[in-house]
Image 1 (cartoon, rainbow, N blue to C red):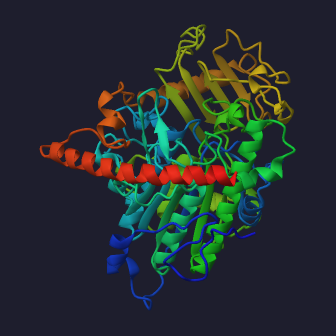
Image 2 (image 1 turned 135 degrees about the vertical axis):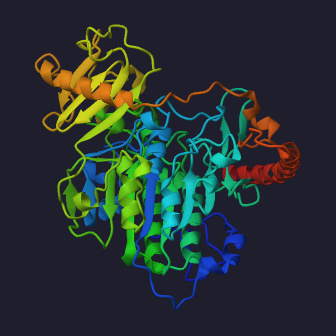
Image 3 (image 1 turned 90 degrees about the horizontal axis):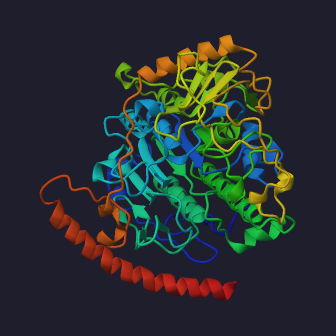
Length: 566
């Protein structure tokens, strides 16, 4: 069904919501005639590219993987397109996003460890060319809506400085879905919604972010000339915690006893309907027949927050399959073999060369990409050029107590956290992370932390090396490291070779200047780059203060209305 917040007719000035309307303020962009083009211009041969990245969706949390969660839109789009059933991402937010944007492994950008935190003077290194920059060079209009999470400590790190013509969304991406506030500990709370490089106080109507981001994406489609190539990167906050969702989506999941799972399921359903509305808009505004739509989760699900990766092992933040094997598909009329499954090896770094090549862009040798062009593997069912994946090498993660050079045959220190896939084989060293299997029946009224029905792994204690044949054993049940030491040695040598190409880890200490209280209550750039920035900062503080007062007054009224409706 089409939601009531789908744009009505072909009128472009407003979008109707069930609760309120959202004013779309893109005057500066629309005022530039280069963005509108001539209606009679010859249509570009370059396809429109819509990349949808969702947050923390588990491997099982889609209908076509056997979930109890209803996802009719995702099921249909995947069934009519190509399902990626051997598709890998990274186990956390920033790592997956950095590899999507650069086509390079974490060891080659310095982002090997954890995520980019709000208080760190860190971001995607500026020397790395990004996917939107390459598409922009090829003539694309580039727009981002949603979660950035690639750093913002200085202006040069912002999305509009990294290749996007426009940006509407959050710099962090795990704040409140309605108020768009995010806390990073006591006394470190701030507003996190941006339009371009300014806080979006005036554009904020307190809408649930899934709805709000979809409306903004649809407004971009409505205002762009479909004869000119478009790259739309739609990075939803959903279904990351906090578990918040409009009450009407909860009604259909009353039968799920676990509250976390029930809320999570409702969030997925809201997301599914949002994507339905987006695809309707693609057809309405004349994009669909020449569009490549890619759908991907950024990492595995978190069972403690309602997600499910069953029957895979592990969860988000781990290098077990449950942390890195993702839901993904491509939907497009341009696909040669529609309605198929791609079992070729595909990694999130592959989208950079694949999409740039599709967009008739150029790939220079000095990009030093780790990704491959996998379009023929996806579209035509040909073998993938990718034969291995370096999942990561994290030299500063907590070391395995029993790891050693001896355990690594003198080739590798197995205390170091690392994971590598070569062909059918997967090797893990160090501390891979939480390693239980969490069956669906554990989603009961009992706290998940009790794990009454979980399959606990007791024989892993003292280990620091694992080897699995993922093709034969995708659930990582049978460790073969003792049976095939020669395979282990070969893969350890490959790890050591990769490690020689690694750059130093970028993981700076917390910078107290990042506190939003020093920036008018807003998360945003704080690093002083040149003279004159101090005056600009003072102006921004005053502007943010006034805007914040107006926003708080409106937010209070909205909160009262929501409580009354509930």
